[in-house]
Length: 457
Image 1 (cartoon, one colour):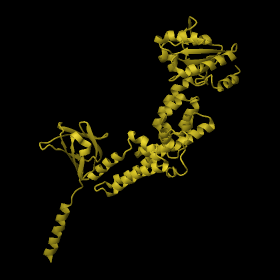
Image 2: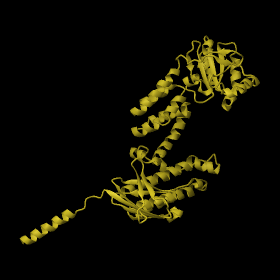
Image 3: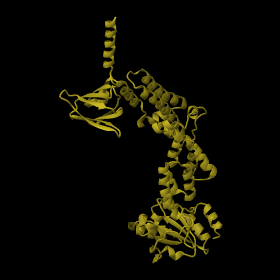
């Protein structure tokens, strides 16, 4: 009996000793016919780049240790995604002369890579867009739904697919399907069919309306989900812009600022915020709305830096100056020469079509305010090579007011001080040389006369 017990103990001990430790590496090999180079590369973004040399048997072979995930294999001009998990032994075979059609992936764990190859084949290509988006709603929805179903079925039936990868891919496939519906409804169908009055039928976007737009993990991990969330808020932004008669960028700030999830809110509110602030009519108001909504310290610091730069041209601040700009009528002019009266500045150029379109209205306003305490100053930012073109246009179009040309064209310090990145741009300065508006209404905008009336000009 003792012998039996001892023998059993010995067997159990041996079994315990033989218990395998977890594998912390994956094996990868490749055999590529008609491939002259002795080297291929296997790259994982921001993690690893391995050069794999061909051995004497013509095989590229290496061990990938403790670095699971998606890799890009490059063999000359050919490339393919390879997915490797610890414990995998993935083998690639191909012919360099017809790489894609001859490609075969086999071995333990090859299922994930084969799925990715299938997914790549179902991807909607630019060349196929017209044929897809001209379809009527029902046919289109069936087609994109079938792609999603095909991929999900492959995930369930292909052997060797990592369970965690499978779960993520099914979420991705659903988001891809919903994103296609969104693209179809918001412009793709009307663009390709030329039906500018197209509106999606009731129920076409029903699945989108049930989308949870506050899923932080999916927002971080899936670009398709991020696009869906972004698109979700577009209509709200447009509606608010119209309702409150405010710019799209300001409406965007308000809508995104009300998003309950902080991570999503902070990213969406910051996207385009620097541009929006530079274009904002009221920089102070724009900044306060942003800073009260955003909780991301790094983003806040960036926006505060832009705000501190821009506030030097806020209302009430002394205007930046220019000196000795060439006058069309002869001599030179400095901004200080015009103190004692309001100065309405038009920054323009002979090549600027929107600037030229404003000329009739500028003439009309100038005539209406002739003899009043305001002067109309046009600053051309034409380059030196177009100096004669400027001279001739002022004469040919009988432009009024004071006409000058900036000293260094679009790189003049006066433009830089006002952060002028596009023209036409209009500025209003008071008799003391202080800024009334660094982004004054255009002559064609009735709000300009309202502003003049408020100032009793």
